[in-house]
Length: 254
Image (cartoon, rainbow, N blue to C red):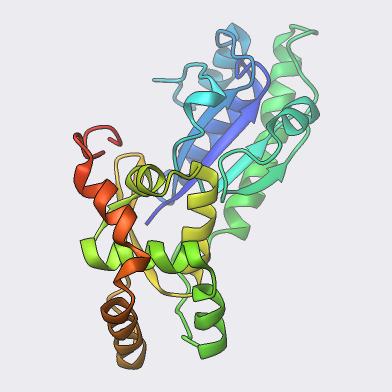
C-alpha cells in the first residue's frame, strides 16, 4: 500500500506545489502525493515554468485549502516553511509531522530563484524517498503479549476493535460518528491498534477502512472472541448508533 504524503505551505502556490510534483515524478509508484496551504493562492506562473522546463508534469497541479485535507488519512505531513509549521500544529493525526524550511522565491519573483528552490527541494525529496524506500510495506507484527495487552488497555481502543470485529470492516468516518469522537483521536487510537498488529487496512480512494487483521494468532483470536461474547455492553451504544445511521459513509468517504 502506497504511503500518503501531504506537503503544506502558506500559499500552496510555489514550494509545496513543486514538492508535490517532484515526489510524484520521482517516486509516484511508492507514494500518493498532494499539497495544501493554510492560506492558499493561485499557482505561481514561475513555479509551473521551472517544473515544466525540468521535464516534470504540472498537469492537475492546483492550490488547495489545508482544512479540506484534514479529514483524510496521511502517513506524512511535511511543511515547507516555518510559518506553516507553526500554524499547522498537529494536523492530520496520526500522520508523522516533518518540518522543512525553504526560502520563499515569490518575493524575488525571478526564474533563477525559482529554479534554485526547485533544485533544493528536489535534493531533499530524493533523500526522503531514499530513506523511506524500504519502509513502504507494513512491519510484521510480533504479537508480544505485553504489546498486545497494552494496546487493548484503553476503553476506546478495545471498544473500537470489538466493533470493527463485529462489522468486519469500518471507515474512520463511521467510527467518528458512532463514538462521537474527533477524527484525530479516532485515527490516533486506530494507528496504535494497527502498529500492534491487531488491525489491517484497505484504502478506497482517499480513505482508509479498518478490519481485524486476518493474521492474528489463534490465542489472540480466542481472547477477542471471549471478550466480545462476555462483554457485549462495551459496544452496545456505538453499535446502536451505527445501525441507526441513515446514510452510512460509503458515499461520504469516497
